[in-house]
Length: 597
Image 1 (cartoon, rainbow, N blue to C red):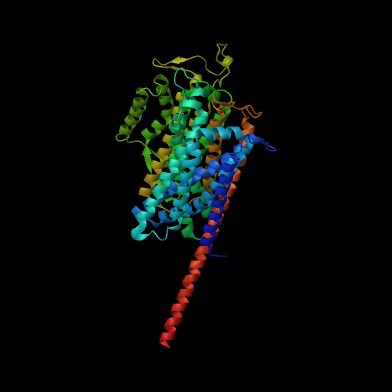
Image 2 (cartoon, rainbow, N blue to C red):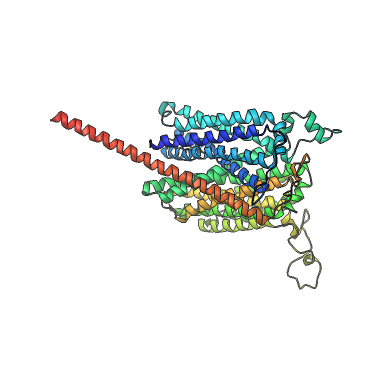
């Protein structure tokens, strides 16, 4: 056996080669006319495509999100002269290189499964996006592969005066990765919202005869999907980095390693939570464009067949925010002097009143009315001015308790379904019902129970969750500046919080990916390609949840294997280097002894 680095390089090359072989064979198979349809045993064709496609997307999300995280860390390490950022970037890259080969393998399997189960749909899509599938996407994928492995294997060579060249490779890798994402999102978005035909021309005729590849790519949800996936990939990369840090922290044998992996986990969580705070608004933009494309999609998602999917999504998002804020609290506990940190009572009052005030403002002035932005900004601005003059303060512990409570309240509003109160409970009665009924007119808006199920309330809840998290990070930064942080002394349970955050993020991505695909209803391509198979139905939430859980666990196991493989090879490399140093020392000692003799 060769050295660890050589074995890793050979393994990665073999897996990449197998992935390209699968893709090439599948492309050749696609040329067979009228290919027969095969039936997968057990779950059926849709389940087979679902599982393989979702696994491929998860690996792709990581290898697109992790390089962004890595390059930013490398730049910070170069600018600040902090070797921790360099080590962090290098360890995440080693895992990324192993998982990149899994992206190629699952991509090849996905094409095979798609050709076997839906050959006519696959042929139709390839014919309409031939330039994308046969030329642009493969070229970008090959370029990304070359740059990634150049970036990984030239790490030692491009140091010192050549460091900027290595950073430039990282930037180029991210540019190509983002371009790959944008290109492949075109056909994906087209399946949900095909470009509308000009007036007087049938959609089918327009697509088959007149529309160019650019017309088909530049559809309603292409750019919203690009934004949503890009932000989601950054979040994904951050949380998986936190997962890597948690595993390595648990395996660490020295205080020095525990201190580094404690810091590593915090940075990963910081990136993940930062992107996660933006993600709901990117999701709203995507949903808005879907509803604007066809009004029937919106109630189908929010109030009909897929409504309970959104209930579970709300629960998962609430749990992620709660866990991320709990991690911040655990992080603050290892800072000496954190208990002395206080914050203005005006911020506490602002945090508590945001759900009500913003809900009323957005009910009266729906987004994108200019007043819907002016009123919330003015409200927050007034309290930020009051902070400078109000002498009353509250302790860190009080702020954190209030923040946890507001996360629960915000999530409860987010999860409130349409018609959650029985109709008869709101009817006039003899006073025996404790639930208030009717509307309360405030002059500028009428308040009733059903407001909690409407979008203004959901937007207010999302803003509340984001604001609470920002306040907790402000507290954390104050504690760092005024106290002394003890890296490696964090509560042991924090590492399981990082594991939970990564699992929850993966599971939620799988759930919402299913929702986006299911909005096509009984179409393969909305309004163009009907799904006449027996599986053209909306699956139940229970069925979908079990399937998504299985996919998430499979992905988790593969990522865990990659981390353990990297950890073991890293230890072997350190051992070999240490042995080499000892041999060199012995030789020098022998030479000195010989000369002295």
